[in-house]
Image (cartoon, rainbow, N blue to C red; front, side, top):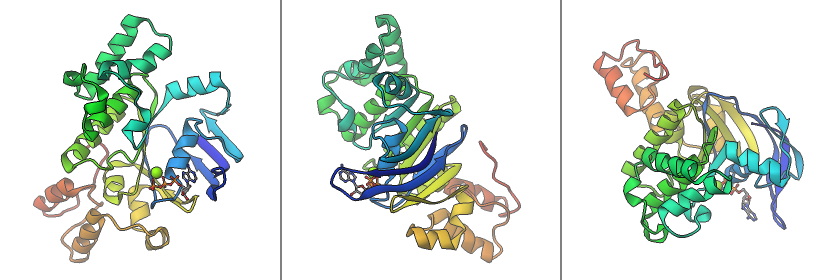
Length: 281
Ligand SMILES: Nc1ncnc2c1ncn2[C@@H]1O[C@H](COP(=O)(O)OP(=O)(O)OP(=O)(O)O)[C@@H](O)[C@H]1O
Ligand SMILES: [Mg+2]
């Protein structure tokens, strides 16, 4: 996905995007990080052509996004957006009907659609909710149904707007595990968040947004060890970076930054010594 000099303003409102230049490569877990009102959701809506730039261009896999029905239908098959609020993408009826809606709309045979739905429910661990009306599900359950609906379209990329917002710690951890699993299954994953701890532990590539612009991008360590970026963006330093920096100063931790507390603990058990973090370890 690539955006070149993209500007967007909501009708009668101020500029929400002010010249965004961004290129997201395949194979990285990306976090779009920024405070409230930075333009994260507005940016994600451009990824699936839900909004059209007032100026500038969006490209997907090297070709210019067209705002025709046919093009957008194909694009949304390849790139699925999980909205922050699951109610925003729910229709009615049972969970099964809800998740079937997309595949049936693609014109798939009933058998094929059914298989996709069952697979998506299985991946999300919500087979038992199949016949429940979506209306009466809890927030966390609705979130899973919303993700299953996107998964049933079998997209190449999944974009999550604030995936862990309003989830309790256990559901958050579960959702992160699901996103990791989808990534291992070969899906591209992009999330938007203002949770610096989540961005640091989850993403391989961080895009920092502020006031409708991309302020910086880079690896999590590059971003969070750069004092200028931290102070300019108004973001907090992730807890793990704060602790690790302190331990490094005291000579108790060597080598690369741990990604999360679990990794830090195991590094400390190994004398804090020389362990380098490796992807997938
Ligand atoms: N429907 C809308 N109509 C008018 N202005 C809007 C609308 N949606 C967003 N905006 C404005 O656009 C700007 C960017 O908002 P956006 O929702 O993209 O930010 P965000 O980074 O997703 O914030 P949050 O973390 O609160 O979700 C803000 O100034 C916001 O007030
Ligand atoms: Mg938002």
